[in-house]
Length: 286
Image (cartoon, rainbow, N blue to C red):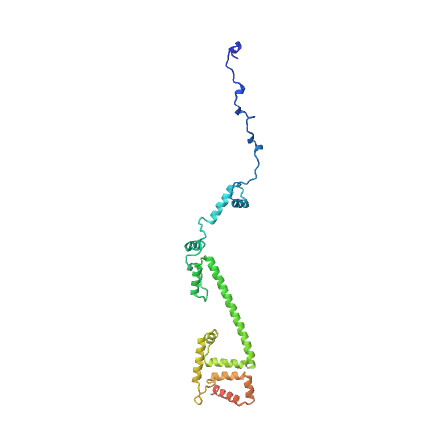
C-alpha cells in the first residue's frame, strides 16, 4: 500500500478482472461443433466420392481398404501386362494387323516356325502350309499345335482307309471263292501262270488297281505282243500258256487242283488226257 493510498490521495488503479479478453476463456468460448459428440458417424467408403458407377462397382468388388492399396494393385497390374500396348487393329489396316500379330508372337518369317518335315512328307506342301499360317497371323505355339493336329488327323484317316481297303479285299476274295467254288485253287494257279507268262509284276497290279489306265493299256499290249510271238505256224492260232518248262509245270499243278479236270482225266476224256500228256512233254522233255 502506498503512502498516497493511506492518506486518501489518488493512485494508479489496478487492472480490473473484467478487462481480460473473452477469447481467452476456456469454459464458455469453445465452439460446440468441435466436440466429439457433435461429429456425425459416416458409413461411406473411402472412394465414396467416385462418380463413375462402373469404376465404383469395381472398387466395391475388389474390396480395397484404402487408396494406397488400390494404387499398389494397379501398379502391379501394369508391370505384369507391360508398358507396350498394341490396340486391336481395324479390318482394313494390314500394317496394324502385322504389328498386332508380331506383338502376339508371330515370327518374322514362315521358316522361323521351326516346323520339321515329317517322314514321307511333301516339302512343297509344308512350305505352302507355313506360309499360310504366317499370313493368318498365328504365333509359333499355335502354328506348331495346328500342324501336329493335322498330322494326327492325316495319320488316322490313312489308317482308317487302309483298314477299309483290307476289309473290302477280304470281302472280294470271299465272293470270288463262292463264285469259283472248289476250283478256286486251280483258277488261282492259272492267274499266277498268266502273271509269270506275261511278266506281270506286283507293282504293275498295284498301279492298275489304283486306277492307272496307262498301266492297263501297257499290260494288254504286252499280252498281245506275246500272243503274236506264240502263234503256231500251221494254223495261226495262239498256243497255250505252257510253252516253257516252268509254265507247263505251273499249269500241271493248277490242273491237279482242278477237280473238274481230274474227273475228266480219270474218266478217260480224250481232250483232258491229251492236254495232260502235252504238258508233261514240255515240262519233262529231257
